Image (cartoon, rainbow, N blue to C red; front, side, top):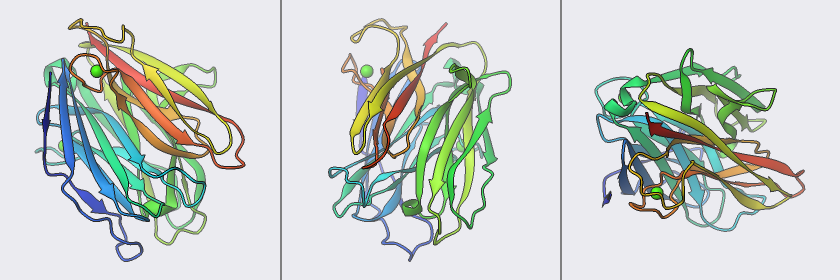
Length: 318
Ligand SMILES: [Ca+2]
Ligand SMILES: [Ca+2]
């Protein structure tokens, strides 16, 4: 079942006002889809040409955040100027606690000379279906806030539990940042690590504003949900824009009540720019984006071929 509502949302101007054209706060459109134990909230807002901004999606209380998605869409991608996801992370919102368990933040940069659309996705779990077994980890990334950094990364771990989501928060100008990896950790033996989240990001060599960074992991304990880690890969050659979709188990139009649903996801492998990382719908009943995880990236002109890997973290009631 689905229901759509228009709600107020916020587009926040990037930090360091005055150093860039401010993003125009606009009433944004939010859509909410309920699918079994999961609720999917997406918020869309426009981003003026050449600006950075944040779009947020909020879980309906008392549901808690398990997955975070971000999207920037707009004019055809060119190598420069460019658009990208600058940061994507869980945050604390209007609920009574101080845990980053209720808001998904998409920090985006529109490098183009035309309006683009930004989107944030929040996947939210009911308390009785794992929501009350979620724990939120965060730690400062080892990073000098006043100098640039290429390929800075950090892992957030779930001691004794399993990773379902995460993110990278970076403070500073979105135009100076790019998120390169934001997904389950991949171990040196090539296996997906179900206990850790890994991020990689770049900050321009001579930043005009100080940046600081925090890596987040969202961990699921308890025994309410079974989990599956699925992935899909796509090869991108120079100056190509391509998508990779990791699908949750089950038939495309499965009607079973107790079926697999995506509760988190992300990507690894981007040397270029990431444009989309969010849950997708395979047009089954209810139209909820519960079927897997979509990522879309651009490899730079002149860049070497890269393998973009999309990860879907899928859950089903025991
Ligand atoms: Ca909170
Ligand atoms: Ca669906």
